[in-house]
Amino acid sequence: MAVGTVARERVERLDRIWQERPGFTGWLTTTDHKRIGLLYLVTSLVFFAAGGVEALVMRTQLAEADERVVGPGTYDQLMTMHGITMIFFFVIPLSIGFFGNYLVPLMIGARDMAFPRMNALSYWLYLGSGILLYSGLALGHAPDAGWFNYVPLASRKFSPGTGVDFYALGLILNSISSTAAAANFLVTIGRLRAPGMSLNRMPLFCFAILATSFSLVFALPALTTDLVFLELSRKFGLHFFDVGRGGNPLLWQDLFWIFGHPEVYIIVLPAFGIATSIIPTFTRRRMAAFPLVALAELLVAFIGFGVWVHHMFATGLPEIAMIFFAAASLIIVIPSGIQIFAWCMTMVTGKPEFRTPLLFIVGFILFFVFGGLSGIMLAAIPFDQQVTDTYFVVAHFHYVIWGAAVFPLLGGLYYWFPKVTGRMYNERLGQTTFWLVFIGTNVTFFPMHISGMLGMPRRVWTYPGYLGWGPENFVSTLGAFFLTGGLVLMAVNLVVSRIRGPLAGPNPFGGATLEWATSSPPPPYNFAVIPKVSSPYATWDTDDRKTDPERLERGDFVLEGGHLTPGTTPVDGHMDEILAMPEESPWPVTLAFVATLGTAFVIANHLIFAIAMVALAAVVLVAWHSGEPEAA
Image 1 (tube, helix red, strand yellow):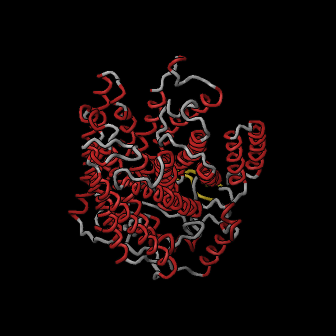
Image 2 (image 1 turned 135 degrees about the vertical axis):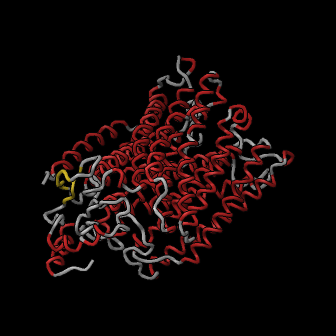
Image 3 (image 1 turned 135 degrees about the horizontal axis):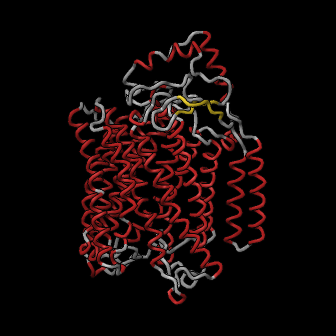
């Protein structure tokens, strides 16, 4: 954007207003959505590495029959920690925490999230819950009852240590973090879109985050309730799951899977949003069936709440209930199919340029179709009852979660790398990484379909050689190391490119959405002048962007009187009010620290200290609200 003297002075004024403290203190007190997104990125990748190491140890243990790399107790802990880490501390924080936080305000033309301090609190609670969980591992009290943590296995009688307490209370803290983050996204997308950005002009990525946030808000209470019931049972002897006292262990499974199956779509929906961002850019074509794709993203989230019982077909439920939920599990194919056809149609009718981000999206579509087909097989009750709790389910799960959810995240890391860092990655290494990861994924997970069909149960520590499962497991283990090699190459590429890569410019790929209309990396206030929008392709339809320099010169929507952002109407995106945003603050990290410490005291049965932490948290909240800004 070419600017004159007056405009330059306005930009310098914005720089002073939005500047945060430098160094470590600045990261602790930041409320900038981009810096919080980067905190999520680094933290989630650290947990990803931890979960990956756990998976490699497990695969090495299973590579051959009668292996003794680790004992059965250690294997159970690794299996549990791997599942918890990948679901709660890697995929969701990366997709929502990083991509959502970094991109949503940029895509809708806002200057920050609706509640910046709550946004910071969500991150610090997420970090606290992760530290708490891994403290259990370091202290020799890691949970070992699986990421699903079924009762009565997780009851005090069968899990007498504190491992399950670390699981339950750590995930309650994590659940509070995710709920707050989801509510923040709902308000941000609903109220902070740029003037003119009506719902039908909103990027499809934001529709995906909107659907995900609705799912989180409605699904997480079921999990939190389950965890509270479990802790009340373990700490105070209540009988929610005790058959002998009128309880029911299936209550745990019902509540867990009411959360657990929408959780699959919570993980996959942001991936859909990333795909709908990358495909138009690299095919030079607008997304086919734009309204239907937006509607399909919302329908996937809605129908996802009606399929949880297909995880429980083997528990002896009434036949009519199983038929209903089998049908619901099949119906979700319809909105998923709409999106697949729209992605393929866009690529077929466009001019695809198969650079690294698009390659990962093509891989994602293939994995999603394959994982969906095995999902249809599992929705068939007789087949499910034959293969339930076998490695066939493990194969299906990983094709969906790893292939269909993580592949777009990897593609998204390449796609938005220039925007975040201001530098380009190495394209040749990127494409080499794709092929290593694509082949490694298939070699790792496809043989599990066969071992599952041969009857190999999941969650086993070892197996005797005469059962004949050795070849499939050996190939899977080789594939896991091959896959890891690809991920290491990706890390090297991005780290070196961050330091030495060529400068990228604002829009190196010719992207269509608003984040490409600002500099790379974006300034703390995102846009010097709040953009106006009259198209869903805000950068491709250039009339609005041509007026931005003139508007900056005139001071039109520069909002240089403080931490200000426009508030618009939820449906039409009409200008409604100017909102004052809070500045950086030490209170979110302080409150998260107090909450984490209080939770640790509960685990250690120091209830007096835990109550003291509640009182301290109340004091912190008073201090927090003493400095809140008033509306402009």
